[in-house]
Image (cartoon, rainbow, N blue to C red; front, side):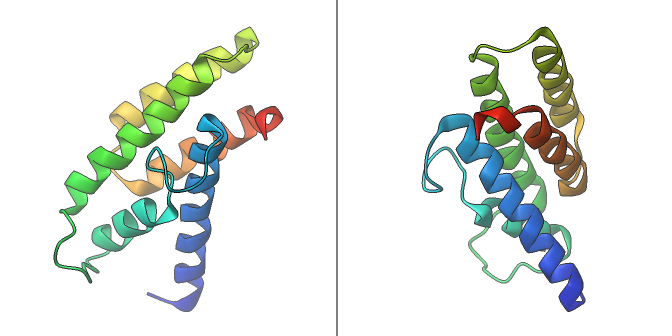
Length: 119
């Protein structure tokens, strides 16, 4: 994996952290927000299981999907426009069907855009 890919993966993991923290108005030590959750998933998908106690990529994917879904649920509790609500519900469905971190990145990017006013 190139240095550029590593930077991109770190940036994607950071965006994941921002999305979760924004939903819960929390720091990165709660609600699965820490970027290491996504970074470890990416590494596992790329065959880089550098810490033997980490679960498999599929188990990590399930966990990260749960964190993202919970964040979307938290946003859905807020006062939203019809369009925001509809778009978040679509993203939640995409999360349920996701089979890789790359599919989750799309959700996070769109989710950050939809929830920009909650910064």
